[in-house]
Image 1 (cartoon, rainbow, N blue to C red):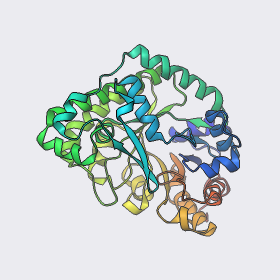
Image 2: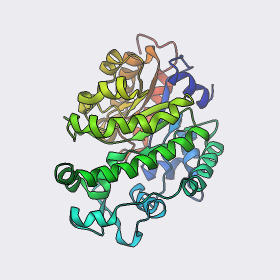
Image 3: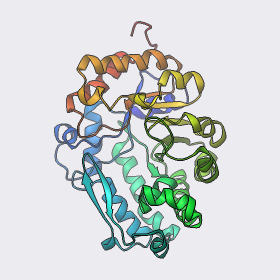
Image 4: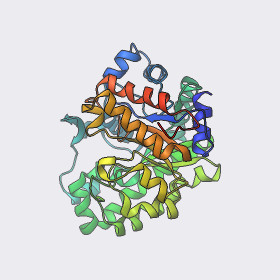
Length: 359
């Protein structure tokens, strides 16, 4: 069974030959060891996925350019922003936008983005999707990812200004969300016509380890209706709507599943109370993707620790289907290469169907 067949059966809750492996890898060392030269980034990513046994991914790694830099480039090209006025720089293990052309909410109103034409977006996005399908198929499933509207607005303003604007400048928040929503909707419409996989992932980080970042009332008012609008082109053609957010989502998860109608959830942070076994009991028809802790087990654990974490997820969730095992965030640079590979090999070793009760 190839990766596409395995993915198709998994998302339809039909048992494949084994549990699916799913992840995003941002650790350049993994690509150096298993992908070789970085002449063609898409081909290098596909080579790496094949070599380590990764069935499905959402990420094409560029060792020279963090995704945050690419985000600013995308804004400049399709949202009429002056790239020279924006800068992203690293801090710790992540990157932040560290320069904007405004310092206050009043100034920010003068820099509101304006979305490019649908045709301009299509001229870029459709060839990318077609190339990804050709390069990854059939050994790896490439699931396209779209950054959600709230995350866009937070990145545009920064978190502090965005939270202030929710109270003091709601019209500014509305304008930013409207532009981001139309961007997402355009992407999902184009993806529905040119899919690389029978699913799309929308990433919208709305929580941290113990709670939501925003009030449920704000999310129900401003985010959930937009998600339904963004996902609608996918649902119309039968593609699965996957949702990504780090953190503790329980306050809003019923809304996402039963109101918005998401089909799958990623990345399932155990340290944030997102236990896959509990989620399966509460949401028996929800595709679950991720689940292996990246806070301690993957960066610091032994091979036995990692294997045990994989076996637990497979034993508790695997028999019901709809499971893809991978990291609970991403395989970031602090994860040793051998630990990442151990995780995928453990899925291959212990995840064959029918799942043994002794796994």
